[in-house]
Length: 194
Image (cartoon, rainbow, N blue to C red; front, top):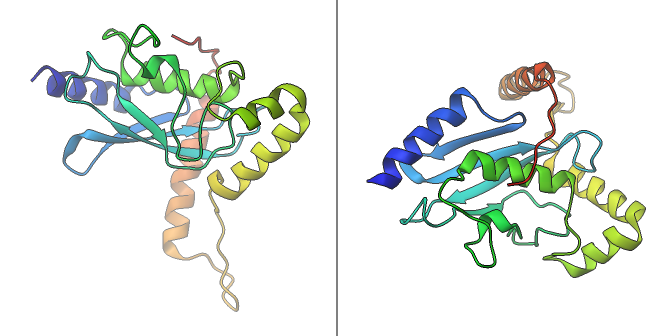
């Protein structure tokens, strides 16, 4: 019961006052199966990308952390090819920093910060971590390439012989433009990891 009421409050908060660049919603009727999207930060290799995450809320939430993983492929030292995330806020003590006072919004904000500032000293992907430490230019090029290939939304789909977008493309483009305008209106703030 505590899980359901807390999740309802958190989802309400995420819909009315989402952190900048983050959206979160429940899938269908299952309140413990969520999806989130994080906009890649400016001046990072993930700029222009929209990254989708899967969030599974355990039965003992908030006493256990939510299970989160990226569904969108991302080239990052703390995120593996399956989308698993190496972050203290997603683990219980003594190895982790999860506390019941944390919530999904704060963890998503921490992951957004981790995207902007990787932690190469606690990697999930040793080869990418080494690249980040010793050849940052190569890391940045690869991360940008992955972002372009997997996370950048294709706004304009033009069919041969028909120079108009399909109605669905126009609607999704309008939604994306509205969301981008909303993000640009937000004052950029520096988040601290919890």
